[in-house]
Image (cartoon, rainbow, N blue to C red; front, side, top):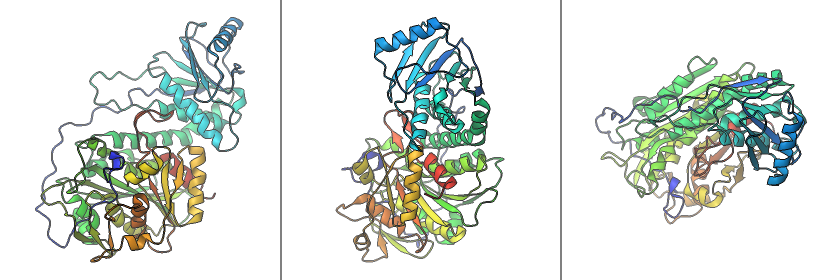
Length: 535
């Protein structure tokens, strides 16, 4: 991506390679400097659900105002309530959204944490507010070693709303510390969610939200791993391990020879500068009673993006280990759906390659041919994400005959410049699919903003010597041009949408449900979309 944009995803273009020439002799993969340590989440506590609980421990009280609410199953004596009320008044705590008040030395509790939610909105937007409150509590209590009791107010109502607080807590307590030599053992004491509806909340947690939390964790783990640990082959290994024993799932992996046989010159071109060969991975899941035609999710999986011959500046390049976040999101969404036995039919394709400036790397000006026979003039090797997606979308449309295709990628710095980290950029010419994605974004809190796909972009990307070129020299609307390029390879008549997540995949500061680092953006949105396809 151009330096003028956010260095995290510098590119208006992504590289393509000429595969009519013979590649260099195969090289053995480079050995890694390190091997993965223990599981990342040393801060994760187990969850229990009960109708009552008592001190000692830390007490969490979600609040919609300044008045301490009636609690379910947690008894506070008159003296304790009076002390809390006095502290609320002294701190001028209003219970507003994002407000926290930690109280110590009151009654038998190690601490009492009041979590403000503000007035709860109606409809699906309430789910995101409840989830965020759980995440803020988790982050505030990371150093707490005592048992934790979350007293769910009576006013929350339904069990599915209460379960959102538990999901938020699970997402908020995530940490990646497997390479820290001083990592601590997980706290042995559970987080207990107390409610008169404990059985129903626990059942929902086990049947759906546990799998969703596991999916988000997988995505964050994959995107956070250093590139000497995670590359195309090990991405496949880690993903296979995550799906081990999960029913209803088939996994297909194409190596270089298989891709060459299918004529996938675009993804092979991107990977030919690295000694770590590319892979294309397809995971299929079909739940009981699911429709015949699947929803197809396609993720960009550049496990490290140096920019290739069009090399990036060194500043911030380390973050290019996250350029496979789209593929991580796709794998994680499939894991959530499959482990929760959702009654859906979804296929996920991950286009995996490492973009390096080796002696066999593709050169600006090279021409490659995709699986369908379309030709690409590669003018910028740092516009490689759209190149790997070209073969991937052609493959999934040919093999799976999907009802719709959604591509997910950290594609352009232009999307970051336009929307920063508040929204993912959404592109589509299918109004029904746009509506479904926008609807799914409301309860999940993963916001999207639609950007244009003008017909003139086809003229802008027309090549003098091939069917299409991967960038427009001199700039232009980079995010829209990148999306148009990807859509060029989706079979006409197939509903398609593209999510450019360059600005939202990695966070420089924590949000309620995403600590600093990989956000796993899109897992919750795509999970919601797959389960509820109608707007």
